[in-house]
Image (cartoon, rainbow, N blue to C red; front, side, top):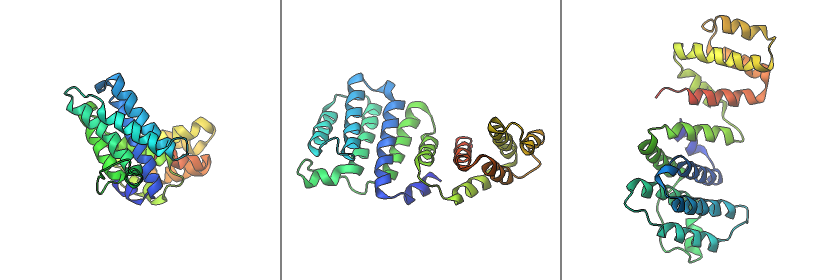
Length: 226
């Protein structure tokens, strides 16, 4: 699912997602980094982001990159990999511009947001055992201007019967927070197996409004089995 969504993003969106994925790795794996490494990684990624709004210069990014590259890792292979994710993310965004302006001599080939996502997943899995792909997909959905309705259909199709009953009850409770007198959803709580999950989801979207579909999508992703 994540791979499919990342393939469909436009180049600018891919760049911003790359930076977000790298920032999340630095944050989640901060315990493996020294305070200096954390600071230099954050400055490097922050400068790359600021370039998009004209709040930084290409020279400032080159300087931040040089400082980031010189930081001492002191034997931690995992720390090297964490910092490498930041390099990949910045390269997705700006490496061609840096090379064109003579501020970088080399160029990494075939880099995309998918490269950054995969490296980030590997690093976080090694450090915490966590499912970074779930966070990445959730972040993608939360920050998207629009999500293809087919994504919801595909996710609903993958839900088994046991999980469907639990999600139907959760969707009903979420509606009842805003509409406590909604009898339909009280009935769903009484018998969450009675109606197909897709029917409950559509009815909840109709009652709550546009934001409900996004919330449901995120819950579907967050509750996906390993």
